[in-house]
Structure formats: C-alpha cells, structure tokens
Length: 254
Image (cartoon, rainbow, N blue to C red; front, side, top):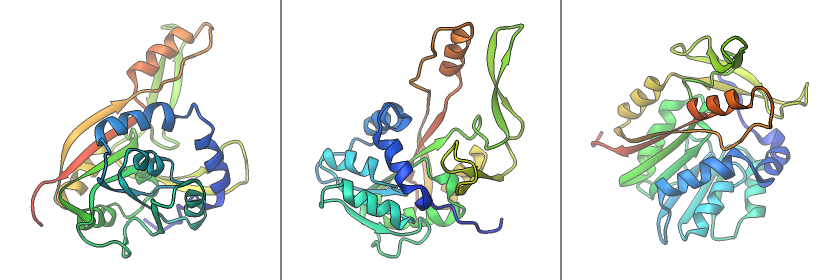
C-alpha cells in the first residue's frame, strides 16, 4: 500500500471538543470497560500510544499510574499537555518508531481506536514488544473489523421483517478508504482508514511474540427516540457490537 498521512492534527481542535463534550462512546463505553480490564493503579507504568489529546492518559493518571502519552500529531500533543497535569509525560512519535522510549519501560500499553489509522501494523507491534517489560500487556480497542468496514458496510432496514440489520459487502480483503475527519464539513481534511480482518491482527501479534489472552465485544450505550423503528434499532444495537477489545500478553522470547 502507498504510504499516506493519517494524522488527526488538522482537526485537533474539533477532536478535542468532541471528546471533552460528554456522552461519547469514549466516555460511556470505552473508558469504563478499559479501566475495568486494565486496572490502572499506583505506580503502574502505562504507555497510551496514539494518545490524541490525552483523554485516556488523564484517566489512567487519575488512578495513580505513571503515564506516558505518544502521538504522531504535534497539535494533539499540545492539546494533551494543555489539559493534563505535569506528571504525565507526552512526546511526539510515530507508533512504529518510538525512539524516545527505552526497552522494557512499561507494564502496559493501550492503543484506543487508532490501529485503523496506522499503516505499519507489524512495526507498531514490534515497538510495543520492545518497550513492554517482561509479562507486559497490550490492550487494543478497535472499531469492530467484522461489522465496521469503511465504505463497505452500512445499516439497513427490512420493512417486511421490521428488522434493522448490518450489511457487510467485504471483510476478508484488506482495504483502505479516505474518511472525512470532521463529518459534515465537506471539503475538509481527510484521513486514511485501513481495514484488516481479525485474523490479520492475531497473526501480526503472534509474529511479534504476543498471545491473545482476552477478547471482548462492546455495544453502544445509546437509545433510540420513540418511533416505529425504535424497537428494531434497540435490538440491533444490542446484537451487533461497535467495538472489539483485545488483550495480548508476551508469550515467548523472540
């Protein structure tokens, strides 16, 4: 694949306002579940990779963890530093080239809703392996790759059956698509989203010495307004997950 820029720096202000506005998937779904599984605590060394404006970094630090946040976008790192206590260390770095970080310096790494914007998956997992201490855990949150394929999946409604369904036109093939970074603002900046089937993530983890040790699927917290399709929408929302969580642990020496 041709290398393309995937940084969200051009919409740093919009993205910052979105995450800080409340009632987001990050606040209502991802953060409580990730906190439950990660269990950040006093002295735990966490790398929040592709940290954006530091939303999750701050939450982990509030639990007493020693947090480092890294992102390829200088604009987002600036926003993160503005929001965060000085105890959190931030740096501008590509996920596949963490040259400013030492080997075996973290107990856990989180990558939240960012792998779909990272082209060099293998290099990213190799760097995660390098900077994780022995027995360290890698926590990944993805847009569910089986149901959310950019420009190749969509919601549909069967009037006869009164059923809302998810249409998937392609899954096993890797693909990439340009996505508007601020939906509703036509002509604005775009980013590249990479679709990969689930098996590719698992194979790339195994190649870099990780084993999947936990797997969860998370649904939306939202409810439909009263209407003729509300029941079907609620049922579909509970049956078709939005997000996939993977925990990977160092399995063997390379």
